[in-house]
Each structure stands twice: as structure tokens, then as C-alpha cells.
Length: 405
Ligand SMILES: NC(=O)c1ccc[n+]([C@@H]2O[C@H](COP(=O)([O-])OP(=O)(O)OC[C@H]3O[C@@H](n4cnc5c(N)ncnc54)[C@H](OP(=O)(O)O)[C@@H]3O)[C@@H](O)[C@H]2O)c1
Image 1 (cartoon, rainbow, N blue to C red):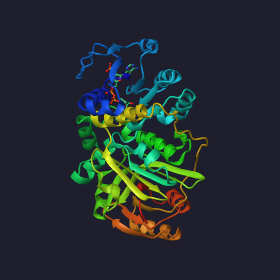
Image 2: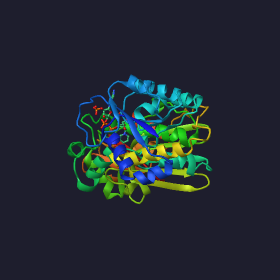
Image 3: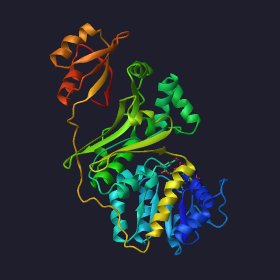
Image 4: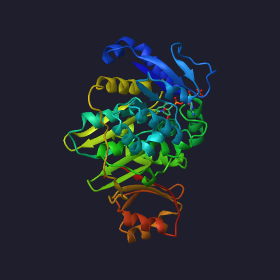
């Protein structure tokens, strides 16, 4: 079997390593040797840590279009429209495609799936969500006897690392971000991670698969962690609450409520113990109940574990008529109507906020009164929340949802 790999960075090199490390097992499962026949990169002169001596290395994609011996393509180069167009060309030739590119897939997966289906090709993308955790396979295969109502996860290792450092070690945001960049978790421009956009892409892909609906990423609200202050984390910690960047979606058969935001979780919540660069996804199905999947969200060999697994699964099923899950309907995204508890820090003394909260029937307990007033409310509905935010007598310095009732 001849394999073309597009991109030979962290993940591409991880794929080469895994194919070599577990060669005999993988060959046995696939039923033939896997040869990396083509590698497409930006700079063919760059030193690489992996042995690519059997591969034709090129920076010209036309070389791959012209080849007639490619059986499957692994895309680990990133990019948006150009990459989509490249992958379409392979799918149109009936060549199976495996991609780790959540940025592109969250926007173009429906378009690519249609092309794949029209040409009996598979489009697999396990590595695009939560790196090494086989969560897409679990939803599409292991949990397919369930109606799924809820998916929730810690989907970004960089932000989880930063928040864990702030929570466990008392570091401020800037120091934690700097260290995560030094360790290679955060990129030089960390916007995609700390802005919540990476998690937004992943909750879109998860929701699409879990509920069998197309999801428009533009409709998914996102709040990142760049405004999180250490003092809120420390105050909440004393109350047994842990801050996590959570991607969450709930589907009732009609509307989809979906969001990415920093949320306080009770310390005994399953996701609270998911620390540092680890990821976890929680799925609730109507037959199985609560399930949780935990593991590495990134890294070369870790992500390659998911990619090579896709390769094996796609090849083992090669004789079967190909199919890819293809939602026909688009989910209507609606704001959540559920009541939630909130952690709120006001810039005012309790006496200044008390009457207003009472007027809105909002019960609360004060958790800190040293600078302004910090409260945790009882569950309040979206209308009460809106009125609470609109008040002009005090300023809300920070506000977070508290998971649990
Ligand atoms: N890193 C992770 O842990 C992880 C986890 C899950 C998913 N992903 C996804 O996997 C993909 C790759 O990530 P990575 O961390 O491996 O990236 P990376 O280390 O930056 O490597 C990117 C590779 O793609 C090549 N490349 C980029 N643009 C290209 C272009 N226009 N034409 C030809 N080659 C191009 C680069 O070539 P040169 O080497 O010549 O510069 C490089 O080899 C991304 O979509 C990412 O979101 C990554």
C-alpha cells in the first residue's frame, strides 16, 4: 500500500515513527506493507528527524496529482481553502483521505464528505479532535446505538495547561502562557488556543457526529481564557470550584445549544481532575448514560496513533462500499434556556448589589468581600441573567457559569 503524506512537521514525523515502531503489527492488520511513497512539504531541503529515503519528496503538489500509485493520503500540513481543494482532488480520484486539520474540517467537512461519498472514498479525521483519544470512533461506532444528548469536553491542551498552572501553582496568566509556549504547547501566536477557537472547531466536529446534524461554526459562541484573573481562580478554589475551558453542546432533537467558555466545575466533577495538557470528552447517551474518554490531546506520536488507526480501519474495510456519515439537516443553534449558577465578581460592596439581586429574585452566597463582592448565585434563568448584566449601579468585573445545580 502506497501512502502520500502532506506535511512532515510534528504530526507527520509522528506518523513515520508510529509506522516504523509498530511495523509488523500494522502490516498484519492491513494485510500488506505500507510504503510512504510521496511526501509533500514546503521546504524540501529542511533537515528532518525521520527516515524518508523511500519517499519522493516534493514541494509541488502536481507531482502527487500525476502519480497513479497512491492508495491513501494523510494530510498533516494545516491550511484552509488551498488544503480543502487539494484533498478534494484526491477524493475525486477515489483515494482515501485522513486529515488532522480541525481548522479546515470544522468549516468544510460537509463539502468534503459529499465529494468523498460521490467517489467511494473515505474521509477520516480522528486526530482532529482531542489528538490521541479515539473519541470520533467511539461516537460513530461504539455509541451508535444511543441517542446522544450531550457532549462536553476539555478539548484544548494549551488552555488546560495554563488554567492548571494558575489553579495548582498560583501562577498568573502571563507566566503560565509563557511557560506553555516554552514547552511547545502554545504557538508563538496563541490566539487560536487562548481565544477558544481551537476548542470551538472541535465541539463543532463532535456535535456534528454525535447528533447527525450539520453545524455552522459561525453560530457557535466562544469565550477564551485571556481575561481570566488569578484572584477569581483562587477565590473559587476555596469554594471547591475549578476553572476549565469547556466545549459543551446539548441537543434535544430540535435545537442545539453549543458554546465554548471557561466554566467553574465542582472539584469532584469528572472533568475537574483532567489537568495540564490532557484532554477529556464526556458523552451522554440515552442507553449507556455517562461515558468519559481521557488522554493526550496533542503531540507527534500521540496524534499519529489516531491517524494510523484511521489508516488501518479504512484499509481493512476497503472492500466494503464506502460510506461517511453525512448529516442531511442543519442544526438550529439556539441560546441555552437552562438555568445555571454563576460566579460573579462585582466592583461594588454587597450593600450596593443586594437590593438589585433581591429584586431579580437571585439568591446568592458571598464568597469574597475583600475587593468588591464575589458571589455564587443559585440557578438563574437567561432573562434574570440579562437583567443582572444590564444594571448600571455596579460593574461586573468577571462572570462565569458554574456547572452543576
Ligand atoms: N501538533 C499536534 O499535536 C496536532 C494535534 C492534532 C492535530 N494537529 C493538526 O495537524 C496538522 C499539522 O500540525 P503539525 O503540528 O504537525 O504542524 P507543523 O509541525 O507546523 O508541520 C506542518 C508541515 O506541513 C508542511 N506545510 C505547511 N504548509 C504547507 C504548504 N502550503 N505546502 C506544503 N507543505 C506545507 C510544512 O512543511 P515544511 O516542514 O517544509 O515547513 C510542515 O512539514 C495541523 O492541521 C494541526 O492542526 C496537530
